[in-house]
Length: 140
Length: 140
Image (cartoon, rainbow over all chains, first blue to last red; front, side, top):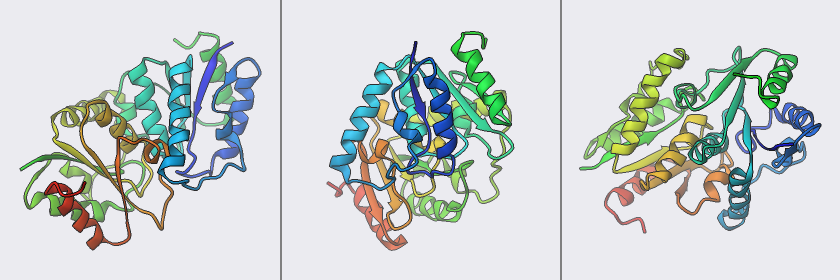
């Protein structure tokens, strides 16, 4: 059982929030997802002021240090996810990035960084199959 | 004369590209902007494949190491800008973030991180006045 940091857009846009929830539920069958709230459809996306947002930042960076690996859904552009990816890379955490290639062009700061494992996908079944491979260690 | 890394969305969306160009031109009156291409309205936003995107990544991270400070326009969510901000923070580079508060909610990974200097603004004159303060060292 692994501790997974799932990264998805919150204030950058919630268009994929229901997908995040399904990914998190899929991961939770056998693992712990530290960032379960990313899939909460009623999660507030409002700024709380810098002092209060600081508590979110401290919690998320603590989870980044604590996790075994990071899984990011990158289709919806997000400053926070970009930040989390650089932060996780700095910590040496394995980072697996997913995106729907027919919908977006992924940043060259991610595709150009050999550290990241990147998986374009077309439909959810393909995504879940890729997750199975990663979580059973058969993705290399 | 300072070397400035200007960060703005490329593949995340070019809705603010003309604004980026005006900001860069403003900075260039007295300083060097390493990332002048971010304001190029004809810049391609297409992925080039991982090997070719690697050249972009190596150039941009080299500029991040070389710059004196980073200025980011964060209104348009961008994975690349989020990554660059974490990377610049890691290097200890001063980071000044601008966004139009009436249009977006900034990520808690940025507003919650006390390292970043964050400037909500409402119009371009206010933005340029803030840039003047930063570049003359009167922003504290």
